[in-house]
Amino acid sequence: MSDRPRGWTVWTEEIPASVMLDMPPDLAKKVVNFLNALALEVGGAIDLDRQPPGDPMDDLAARYSLQINGEPVVFEYVVLREIREIRIPVLVWFH
Image 1: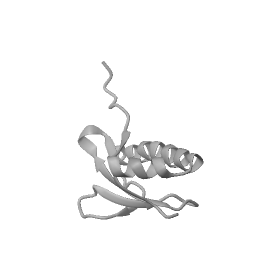
Image 2: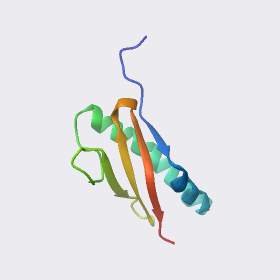
Image 3: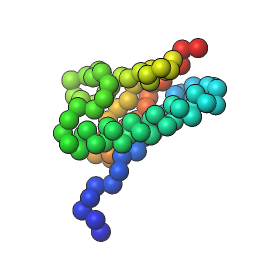
Image 4: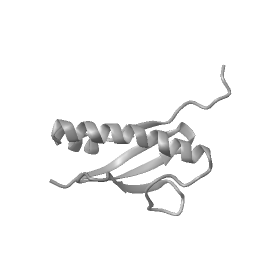
C-alpha cells in the first residue's frame, strides 16, 4: 500500500448539476472540465498548505467562490479536507 494520499475529487450537488444539464452541451462540457481541473488545483494547493483559488467566503478556509473566465458561470465550492474532495453547492449560469 502506498503512503501517498489519494487524489482529490469534485462532487456537484443536485441543483448545480441540474443547472449544468440545462446548459448548451459545449458550455456544460467546459464547466465539467473546469471543475475536474479545479479539484486537482485545489488539492495541490491544500497539500502544499497554500490558499486554493477563488475568493474566500469564510474564516475557516473552507468555502470559496469563483467565476469561470470567459463564461457566464459563477459557483461556490467547499473544501472537504478529510475526504480530499471539493463540493459544489451553488452554481449560477447567467443566460
